[in-house]
Length: 265
Image: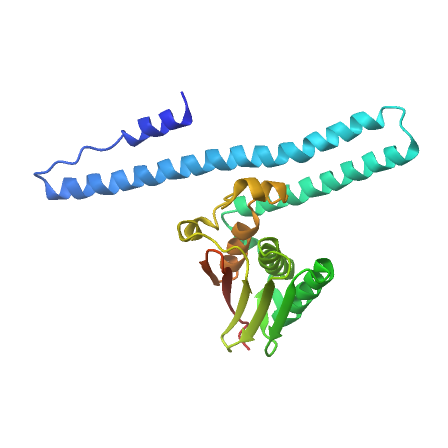
């Protein structure tokens, strides 16, 4: 039976709701809501496994292909190129698996390292990295305020920052503008990453943080996007006690705002 058929069958499994008994009707309604929630979770897990398998299959095929080439009598330069590509794909797969494991952790908050992290410092480091890799293709603006200390995981916070900046660069055409602004308001630090890129249709904004979700799947695959960047951003932000929001206009760009609590002095 197809997944669509399974879904249809599951949706028909509901508790009868009597019209003449208020208490039983309330109980039936609660049970039916729980059944619906379970159905959604099952569908998400199925889709997650299918997408994860798809993403892992790509680098695995490249590795196997290059290992087959290495068994052939190739010139030294071609052997080096095959070994280098296999190594790069193995590294990509390792990062992908790490991201998948992090997203699968329901207790991500408990797994976050807790140490004082100078937030403005890592924002500047990420911006410098972006400027070096971008090589002048975009107008990059950076604005920071007083230093803010976050009690958290430096690696994950850096990953969150980089994912936002990389996402802005990916969906902004050359010559466009990407800006990174951070400010310390006292109890919170606010980070805003905005761009003048292609923007996001309104019906997609609520789904951006779903694992493997892509607004434009064909374009994203060509650019080696796994669809995990923004979900990781959300999980890191929430694991640090913060929240994230997005505003976007199709054809005019997007703006992501992250608010994180600062360490109590």
